[in-house]
Image (cartoon, rainbow, N blue to C red; front, top):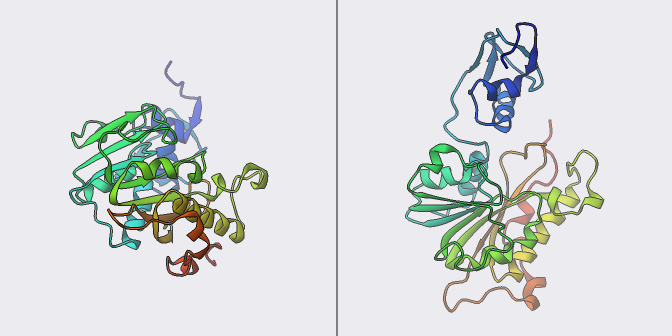
Length: 281
């Protein structure tokens, strides 16, 4: 039913209904970035009430399908040894495909975009012959071979599950010598009982604990941890997020074993350089 001239609707919903964006999540991202105008004025609130006759416009078309792309670009800039060129890659928890898009832009040969959800991958990636869209895939239970041959590079951005529960499965998808760039979200690592009502982890100690737990889990999964870094952007709710860079052992190379975990040199992998508090100002 068409809107009457007197009815109003939230700005984020209006952007979707008018076909300017593909989802309310994308609407939030653009509004928060100051890239939406209402009658020529930059909008600042996703809940702003919009009348039927008001003009909405996007001031700049973002080339990336989600802000997650900027997170992975920051991680690849931090871990400069990683080169996706010519690689067969796995994007675990692909969602709309921001990570997939970055991998392709940096020369990946093919990306398997896997997610537990359905219908989320952006159309431009869904139609790209270099992308295999795998929906309804619970990465915790995907066995070797379920996604084809093992991957030369694995990236992951998973929500509502601890990375510690998934890293072993991801390690089994990695070819010898493969790199893994895994996002760590403290709000899904510390346990609900220690997460406040806001859902935001503000304690530097808990953030560090979450990252250290992921490092240990990666070692227990047989991976060699190479580095850690803070994501250049926070999560949508304001949570600090981090990246772990690990490598699958090459043939004949030793992996971490349970009795070596206590000797992992946290300084060597850059943990002491990570900022766990919120930036000043």
